[in-house]
Image (cartoon, rainbow, N blue to C red; front, side, top):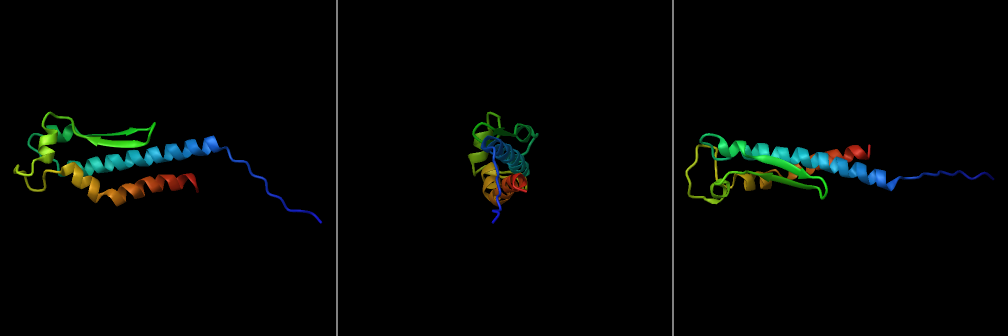
Length: 117
């Protein structure tokens, strides 16, 4: 009686590298999204604070970073007593991160799913 066989070999390093690349793509899309949402709320006078915003992905440890780089960025973010134009607010980055958490997960998951199609 003949036996049916199926042999498969997986290159674990290649699969791991592709998963890492997909996660990095998803994280890049997600950090850009959070920056975009945050920029819609960042206090705005001349636009310096908004233009200083950056989204960076450290691929080595898959860390996404959204930041603003002005001498007053932290003060503007943390001071709840400042008056802002309509739609602009303190905690602009924190709110964006919290409110977009599910979207961020979906963006990363979408890229990872592409690996397993």
